Image: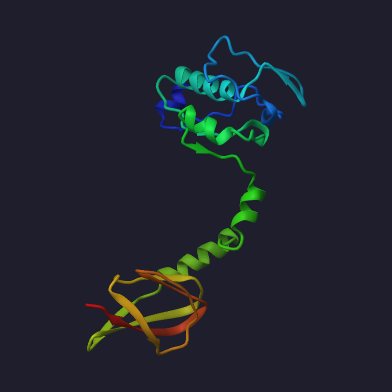
Length: 200
């Protein structure tokens, strides 16, 4: 463990008992310490003498002691068993991060706002994105942004100065989102021209 710490590896806690019934452990006193804290896992569905604070405090202490100086800030509950008081207990014992959801729960939570695809699809998108060039021309108080895209591309984000406001589109291109300093373009191919008013 000390060697891994010296190599720069992050070390995190995964509880002491790794019990499937961690979610049913009592909260504890917050004074649990090694070696007095001794949870006992009887079966897959039974454990004794365990507490939420004990699992957090003692696992953190042991890892920090045995690693020779790491500061344990990350936690993932054994068997992904989550007590209701876990967030508050994590804060109280000095943790900053918790990975307490399964990949299926994560995917379900972000499916509508995230992109999922293969490594090949990801690489193809970035290759097309890296071939995009942007040209800006000035016309009076307006800026004309030309974005030539040689192959089908969707979800391209173009950053713009905060003083620019979209005025009109000279070439059809669906705009998926706009913000104070960006425009996200939908599926497109060819040259897209956007006109911006420049605020004083």
